[in-house]
Length: 187
Image (cartoon, rainbow, N blue to C red; front, side, top):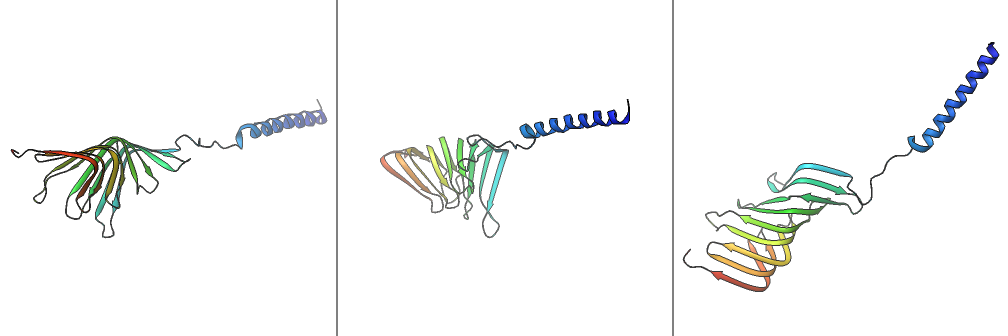
């Protein structure tokens, strides 16, 4: 085999390799995978978001077993969300549910399914327990609302109603309709 034949074979081999590389990059190499518009594109395990006020004091905290981000509508889903609203008077409202959703800024949280709200008793206030479902919480404003059945339980007192609004900052709870209650004086 002379050098001319060797050059021809080398040129053909180079052409085959170049053609194969070109075809390979056209099918796979230059295409980037994209996230599904309907599927999650990111997740966080054991999420713990702490929001501080202007003076550096803890204002509220959102904890979740898992958080998933969905890019199509810029929302996050939360598994087992747990919200703690810390007030300047030392009270802490503890709000939990099995699942929820929030905006990217976490300024609105929808707690879905059964929701349990508690405040421990202090020297100035009795312990309080609120049971409801599908609650809209605005942690920065310290308010929450629902259109569903709500039960408020305190020392010797149970109040039931449909629809509720809680203003945690001002310690007010409003039941909107079908309100009835029971007070036990022996407690």
